[in-house]
Structures are given as structure tokens and as C-alpha cells.
Amino acid sequence: MTANVKEIEIPKKPLPLIGEIQTMYHVGKFIFKKPVTVQYPEEKGDIPERFRYRIFLSPESCIGCTLCQQICPNHSIKMEVWDLSSQNTGAHAIKTARGVRENAQNKRHLYPDVNFGTCTVCRNCEEICPTNAIYLTHEFETARTRNSFTYSPQELTMQEKDVIK
Image 1 (cartoon, helix red, strand yellow):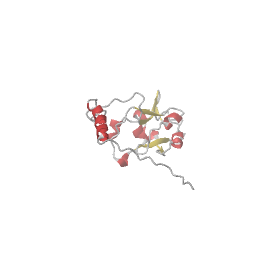
Image 2 (cartoon, rainbow, N blue to C red):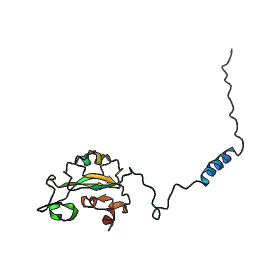
Image 3 (cartoon, rainbow, N blue to C red):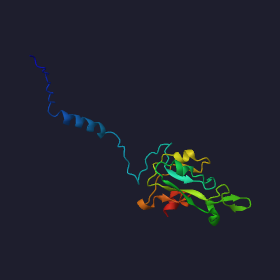
Image 4 (spheres, rainbow, N blue to C red):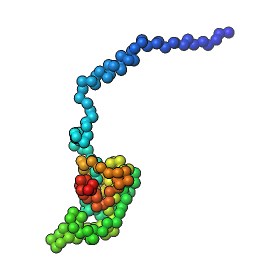
């Protein structure tokens, strides 16, 4: 009767201090290289040309179709009623030769309200908008508290420095 016996190889023990030497080698490679990080408020890092973060709204182009709300994977966009006729000055209204009027194509007065706390900046809203009313820009410095990350349609039309005030 023969037994099936397998020989087991005993793993070789690594030489002492090999792990420490490898660690020191990897650390040493980066000692003389320029650091990747920057001291943020004082220094501004290089922003790639194709980088987009802050969502802006062009109220004169928005037709209130709610496609941006429907395609948002995190449900960060809600449609809000915003009557432009009551605020018919500045950038919120369409200026014509006869004066200022509201957006004639957006009869329901629905405009997007974006929660940047849950927005992943996937750009789906920008891609699906048939009138290009929603677009993303290079602006990314949004200094807000956690509870105030929701931008109303009025705030989406303004520059960030004006929103913070």
C-alpha cells in the first residue's frame, strides 16, 4: 500500500532588513523631486483646460423641460418655480428693444436648483440640455457650509464671489 504524499516546500525566509532597505529606496526617490501638493489659498495649482466644476444657468435659454432633473444620477437637481417677471432687472431677464420681458419659452417658470453637496459633476445635465442653458465652468471655489450647498436658480446665474456675499 502506497500513500500519496506530497512534498511541501518551505518558503525561504527573506534576508533581514530587505524590507527596510526597499522602503528607504522608495522614500529616497521622492526626496529631491518637486512636491505635488500646493499651499492652497496662497498658491493656486494648475487647473487642466478641460476641468469643469461650477454649474451656471442661462435663464433666458432655459425652457423648463426638466431633462436635467431626470438625468441627474444623484437627484441633485430639483426644478424650482422662479418668476422672472417679478425680478425683471439685471441678468435674470431678457432685454429687448421695447424693454425687459420674461422668458417666453419657459411658460411654467421652472428652473434648476442644484445641490452641490451631492453633485458628482458628471456633466449629464450639460450634455442633455437641448438649449445649452446649463453649462459648467472652471470656477470651483465654493466656500459654503454643508447645509447651504443648494444653489437656487438665482444663485446659478451669478458669479461665486457675488453668491458668497
